[in-house]
Amino acid sequence: MTSDALKSSRELPRQLVAPGIEQHFDQLLEARGYRADPAQSGAIRQLAGWCEDWLRGRGSWLRRPAAGMYLWGGVGRGKSFVMDAFFNAAPLVAKRRVHFHAFLHEIQLNLRQLTGRADPLALVAREIAAETRLLCFDEFHVHDIGDAMLLGRLLTCLVEEGVGLVCTSNYPPRGLCPNPLYRDRFEPAIALIEKRFAVVNLDGGEDYRERPGHVWGEYRVAPFELQADAVAEGLPLSEAAEREVSLDVHNRPLRLLAHEGERAWATFDELCRLPRASADFLWLSEGFRHLAVSGVPPLDGQGIDVQQRFLNLVDILYDGGNQLLLVSEASPETLLSEGAHTDFSRTRSRLRQLRVDSGY
Image 1 (cartoon, rainbow, N blue to C red):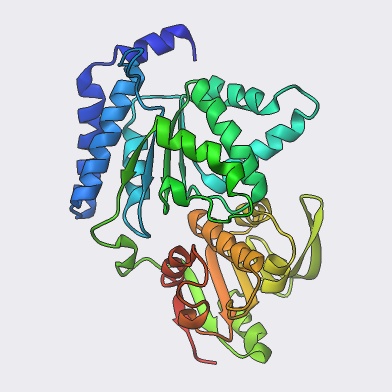
Image 2 (cartoon, rainbow, N blue to C red; image 1 turned 180 degrees about the vertical axis):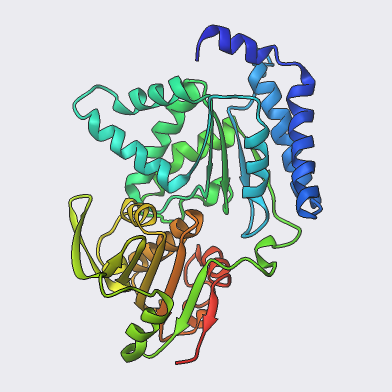
């Protein structure tokens, strides 16, 4: 960002910053017929106030503005709605909102292009800062050692470059990386968030995803021998559909039972038992708006890596606005027991928004 642009952002009149963001939030609520709970109202006020101070660089060498905001709370507490309202009203052109998985995938691609360069993460952060002054992303969580090693340094570089960061997560900063095998690799990132970010707990109030009406696909319960019929009914494909195909996805084969246009059918084993990355699921999300996954087993007793891939798949498809058809011999309620995986509360909430058909 040019010095003139920075100067103008610091001279924004107050009525265009904090009050404007709060007013936009109230208007969105009114348009939807909702009323904010106290936690949401408090969060948007803090976001608006932070944005005003941060844009103007208000503070001193003793007290500088926070580098960003970290909003966390349980499933369905309205974190994304609050951040969307803030993002849309923030008076900047150089701003960007991105899902956390997509952000990491983009960073990894950029790093590959800088192989052999000194301190490539600093270069990537500089490139981001040249185009983006405010970066917002959803679903901040870390379960992969590669992500843990990457993020501590990257966040530090972005903060040093002056990029404002707003994150949402289901976890407090200390709960971001539960795997003890590589938690120490992520400790610098946790320390940075706790020291430089304003941390806001949005827990409390209503679980908004429990409201009726939002359906993003189907969940069909069928014995294994009838699952192909269940897919044929839920994801109609014509005679022209390609069957039993292998596609190259990030230099690895990915086998689809069928695909046609924006519709595709794959097995659970193909997607979740093989060493797939979130980037593979992003590729599916972008290439196929309707995805069927058959052979989904009860996940208790499956390896933690298998469970995590399934959770990542559901997250990415849900946030990408895809239509999902899951076919399993197990009911949604028994797919994974309470407490079997630290992230499954979020997935369970999203599975509840699938229409259930048990007529097989």
